[in-house]
Length: 261
Image 1: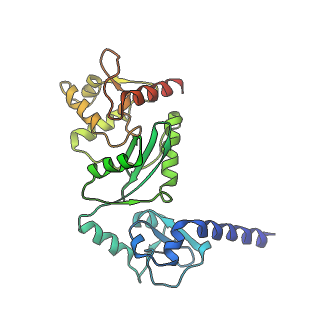
Image 2: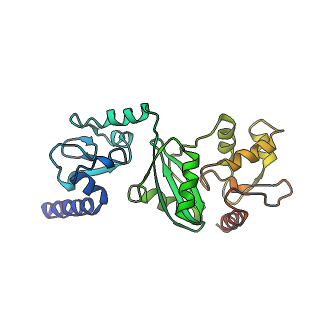
Image 3: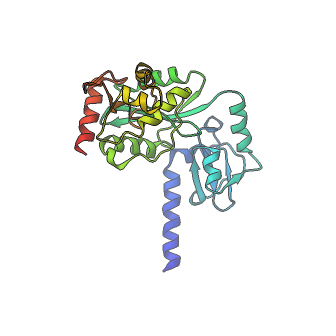
């Protein structure tokens, strides 16, 4: 019975890998996919670039990873043949950050989610994919932007689900690009619980800058991580809604949904 169960489990794993579009990049040793993802092999304990020239692994032994760091955290070591860690280091030293992104539906409209090696670096709602990608390019003009609908499927689903059910929280690593003042503001925003609000003056006082309400508003406008850094929970001191980078209608809808949660 155990042998049969193990066989079924392996067959399921092989089928899941074979149906993943990234597997075809591995099979074809597609160099264009290098840097978009890495794969590990359970039977050898190593991880590789998609273009690795080593003998093709059995699909049931293969796992996919977003970065070399992800693969190493999972307990795998770099392949001595394709040296994936050197490839990643060379890309970093060349000054070209690699950012993967995916676009999908959400209660806020179309939603772009982007991830760097360190974590989610952009959550951008909008009307259409073209304008969202233009927004991402404007924020990261020196980065290599790589579409990865499959690799970011779980992150996109988690964030879209968080919009609908904010009480569940969002357990994803964030990589917020900003200066020291902006990060202090953004950290304070994350302390505002769902269903609550704060004024710009409140946030200024919380970070020890009581006269910086206007600067707080500017930091909110520069926020690259909609909902994860909840700048929509900041309102005017009289309780009215102020501007929102992605539209006051979205802000009102988010606050109404959180009030009902």
